[in-house]
Amino acid sequence: MLIVLVASIVIGVSLSQTAWRWKYKNLWGDGNTHLDVTFYATSNTPFGYGTSEQQLVQDLATIPADAEFVAHLGNLQDADSGMCPPSRMSEVANLLHGQSQTNVPIFVVPGAHDWIKCPNQMSAWARWIAAFGNFEQTNSLVPGGALAAGAAGAFDRPKSIPEIFSKLHHGVLVFGLHLVSGTVTEGDGPEIKARGDQKMSIYVRGTLSRLAGQYRAVVMLGNARPGPQQRPFFDSIREDLNNAKVPTAYIHSHSGFGATEHYPYGRGKKSGKDDVLGSMVAIQAASGEANQAPLKITVGFGKQPFKIG
Image (cartoon, rainbow, N blue to C red; front, side, top):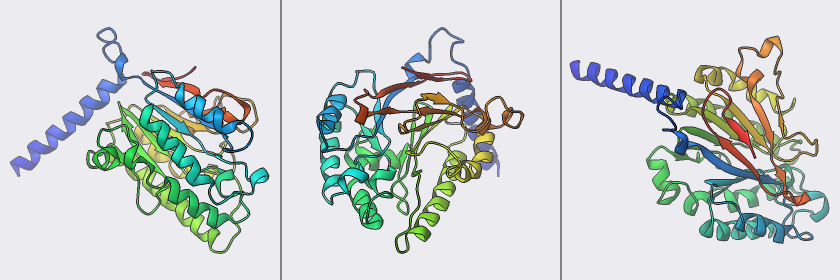
């Protein structure tokens, strides 16, 4: 009994000290500045059309030295123009694997044009999973790949929904999410997508709880611009984010609306004053299709730690 009590006290003190350490940055000069997390985000690179392949290769090859990883937020093809050829996802995966071996890790989330806008939705989805469902086996921020990272509790990709993941890095908890705009209409697709959405919510909530006290900020990566279709997911994790009491950002693909930084769920409104969704910043990534270089995002410290550019 005494051993259990002592262990509980040690764990509690450890978590409180961890949270305290993340909360305050400059009590002793710049002691934590080396723990800033810098990454680059891009999207909409319809590989194989025009110069987009060359543009993507150039963007990845010239990522600045301060990058700790690159996030590709989906739309690796243009479903409207290319009709989703069967070889596309494997070709892109091979290209990205080659770049990640020589530069920085690359994390990929699914986009609407990668499957939901394709003529054969479920076949396109199967090809995406085959190409990217275990992409981090040789592409992880933790030495030894995803297996070593998973054993250390730093990287996790659930087997039942392998399109999503979580990564804890220097006190920043990163989620790769499956958030796309559009409707699944093919076969059992609607039911499969609905179950996946429910599992994603459970996974995010469980990870926020399991790693409580170990992160100072939350970054969510997704394809869709946050709107009414995505609101149920954010509502489902609202309480857990509120309990975490850390700044939260959602980084999404370029949607053509022009805004780089916005507050989709009520900044300044009375309902959002003490609510994480009211203060959640959404950041629109660059569009590779428009020859925009990947957008630099830095996660520092404090109440507003997200810096763009």
